[in-house]
Length: 283
Image (tube, rainbow, N blue to C red; front, side, top):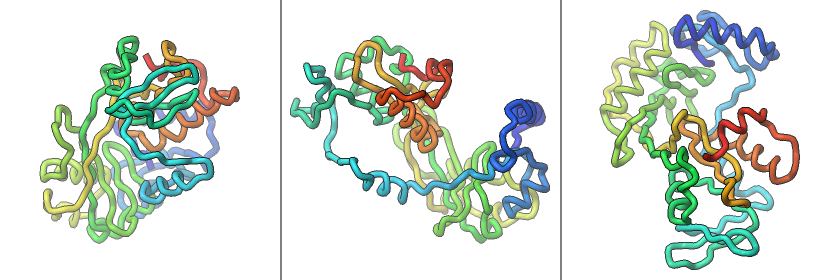
């Protein structure tokens, strides 16, 4: 459930839905009352409901992906890349070869910038050179304080996820210039305020939760100017691909961008229009 942020955006989104004419069982506009009924909680506004949207649990998804046939995990820390007659070699800090292949995809978030710089490949990529790590945290709220929690993901200015057994995840914060990603009272005050902003009246227990007393998780995002990722083959380094800068959309972006890279490697039709592909091309 994606709630309207304001009347102007709601009107623009309604026009978009009307123009694109998506199937109603995939996405449709809903009133505040219908949104609340779908979520099982009083919500602050109406919005759009993605009936086939899903909740992904990384702790289950990642092991399943790593267990896929053909996937081999080779632990190590890549310091730089070197080109040779067969393609590319991944080297550790001592210069030892960790692996080599005709095609290499750098999908290590903010770490990609350092690898490219150490490989003397960053200079032709001024936008990628501006990639920075942005700290943030999420908070686990007791489902009991939310009437059991929402029945679907609720997004808007922040987000609130259904109870997965250990609480409802509320997020998130954006901390510029941070030297560490950490959980704290200030961040939890932000996530609680965002959760409250998504919900309507009748959830007073949420306001009784004390910032700083709740469990949560903190980490980093790789962010590029314009908030779009950098995905594709490097024009000045054939065979070397980049997939980074997903910002706040890591899991959803990565699946689509994986399809994009695979389609190009296999000579298949692209899942993205040409103009969108150009917008995210590494530069």
